[in-house]
Each structure stands twice: as structure tokens, then as C-alpha cells.
Amino acid sequence: MEATTYGILVVLTLAIAYVVFRVIVRRDYRRKGKLTPFSTFMEYVAILSWVYLTYQNRPADWPTVHVGTVLEITGSILFYGGMAITLFNLAALGIRRSHGQEVNRLKQSGFYRATRNPQAVAFFLAIVGYVILWPAWRGVVALMMLAVLLHLMVITEEEHLRDVFGEEYVRYCGRVPRYIGVLRRS
Image 1: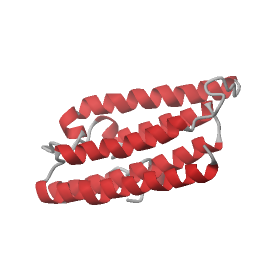
Image 2: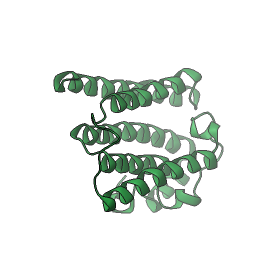
Image 3: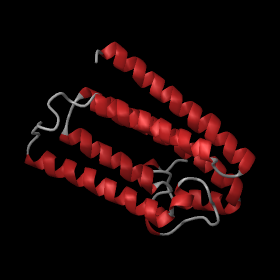
Image 4: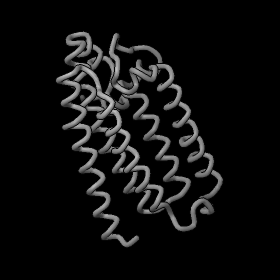
């Protein structure tokens, strides 16, 4: 795929993510207090659009690129560790809560003591590992796209949690960073 077409698809994918998270999901949170099946489906459309674009534009010699032992170990740890932590946190939070269907209490234990968004942080680290293992400029673009997509999702969810939990959530935000400690500002 040529760079111009790829650039158009990147912009289109980010536009879809914006509409999904900042319009559709936000509207459901405000009107219904949870995600509807349609908004949950649209979240998957946004995320899978990113996955498809990233997979279709992986390096031509993927997965045969050899980056050296240190980078292979580092990339593998980040990728597999990030994916494991993502799946662990999805399971620990529960499928209904992970999909915005149910909010009965504010989760503040486990990884949620270190970051308000452990699934997003862990998945992002997994993709950093992917980019280390299979370096290509499109991998870096995919990583930047993911950062934008995840941030749109996070700020929408945080608005909802602030509405639901009020001062308890505000205090939690004061104690725990949105992503990681060095990026403490919320």
C-alpha cells in the first residue's frame, strides 16, 4: 500500500475512533449510564479498524526481521507481558465492567493502585514490544494511532466514572496517575 493511501486510512481510522468514543459512547454513558450493545459493538469496530490497518501494513519481511538478542528479549517481554497483564486485568475487572455494561464500585486495587488504566497501559506496552520486534515506520505510526485511540477511550470513560462516583473518583484521580507516574497530570 502506498504512503498516501496509508495516510488516508490512518486519518479515517482516527476519525472513526473519535466519533465512536467521543460521540456514540459518550452519549450512551450520559443518557443510559452504561454502554448499549450498539456502542459496545462500535468500540470493537474502532479498535478492530486499528488492528486491521496495523496488521495489513506490517513490515514486508515480518516476522523474519532479526533485531538482535537484547531487542528480541526486550520486545518479547513487553509484548507477551503487556498482553498477559491486559488479559489479567480484563478478567479481574470482569467482562461486564470491562465493556461499560456495569459500574457498581470503583476498582482501586491490584494494578489500579498504580494506574487508573492498567489495560490501556499494558496493551500499549505490548504494542511497543511489537514495534521493537518488527521495526518499521508504519509500526511507529500504528503506535501513535493507538495512543490517540486509547486516550479518546480513556477520557470518555473517566468522564463517566466522575459522573458516577463523584468525589470518590476525584480523590482517586488525585492519588493515582491516568497512565504512569511520570505522566501524573489528569
